[in-house]
Length: 293
Length: 347
Image (tube, rainbow over all chains, first blue to last red; front, side, top):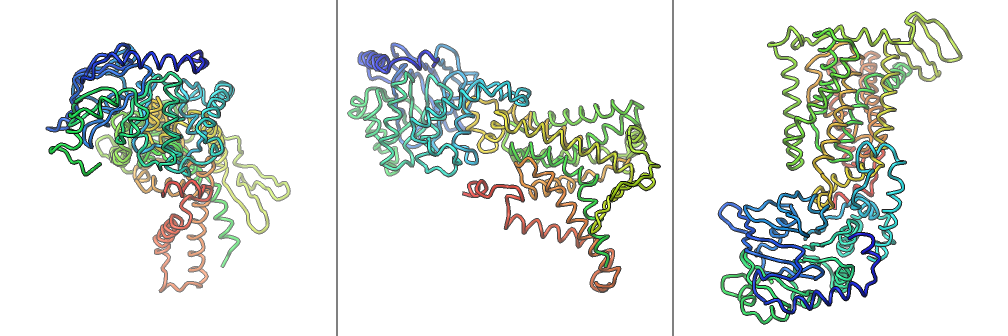
């Protein structure tokens, strides 16, 4: 997102969201269905570990400006698909475009630079660094991150100050401002989730990929996190998240994609999905271990 | 029991040429291990690159001294690249395994008989240090005295009453250059680790996947840290070779690397002055123990049936090892380290 987009009024984004919803209203609830304005288009993605095929997705599109949930029972391949799309793992075959560019050959850090930033199922706070340093490290295109320039503080002090200001705004928004000089390792599990999300925003991403954002978060904080995720959409970002909790999916997702045994079995709005027999089958069917949920 | 002699000698050593070797090598290691979390167990080999690069260039190939220095640094850079390219994409422990093996390979190659006409095999090389000492501004025949500082035939004596420091004019020149190098490296490393570049290194130490997810080319940063630390290690090799005016392959064994780690952990890893303080303290304690035990035997305070003079060396190593264990239990963050940070790591 560019600076000018940041300055847009929230109403503009709300309108954009309404438009996105309206666009999705005509989309058929079928696996791999085409969307009017996809930011991410993946085809034939396959990842096998020896004989085990962990992911085998024929086609998946994610509509720009929406919150899309990726659900499925344990072992469905959701996190593996995440890792593939974000460059943290290499597929056996397949290709995908992100924001009009092929992203298949990009390495993980290049994916992040291209505007698709992820978080992790087990939060990865940089524990022995302050909350502020956790934020500052995420800012993109820092001149001071080049070794030679690092030696000359005059070259990067101004950029650093600007980044610090932006970090303060984000920490304010995520209620972490009082913790900014604490070590990230001193934060509670929920606060680390908030920090990870705030940190991802330092990159000004176009798309945020959240891997189980609610895992291990106490119920009191869940509502706060939900609001923050909705806030991402209101800022014009596209969100794709992995989740188990159907209530949460119902509350915030505009669209839901369901995976089982590595395949995309269906897609649709939350209402369509909860009445889909294929989904119930996947979660409760004889072939799957429902006890895990 | 001559306590004046014991403490004078130990303090003289604590800021002397040998301590400088440990301090410089540990500054390099601090960039790699302290800040970036790279387990380089081959720092002795980087020092060997410097020492042998210089010695081979000057003695075997007859190049000028300055070329020897450049070749020493160049060899360290090449070695960092050779070790880093295959291993830095892998998990941290692979670098540890590869560097420890590489250090042994370097030592074995240096003592191999195949090219001993160049390297001198296990005897090593000498005769490369004269150009260095010719640059010395210290007059080896100087005789003067100002207050408590005096020169006696080129030997510097600083007499503080309760202790005195004494250095030969050659040691003095090595120390001058060595301390200037320490100062330069501390300034450079200090600027680097307090820059956004250094912040990325610390991030990699904490969790390289997270740093990757934030758009940083982790491999490139790790490589830069390995090279910088290796260059500083090569400088330690120069001081080592020059202070002794020879190079010998077996002095670059893995023990050497482990002393650097002891120095770094004692002083405090990821603390700018940790390596210097650690080196001074390590070498002071080492000398204090040896001198005390030797003096104790000489003045019959320690009966020879209990401790023979030849057993002093092994006992000192035993005691230093014990001290290291106690340090890791009671003050694992080292002298300058931050306990609060360390508690987080344990969690």
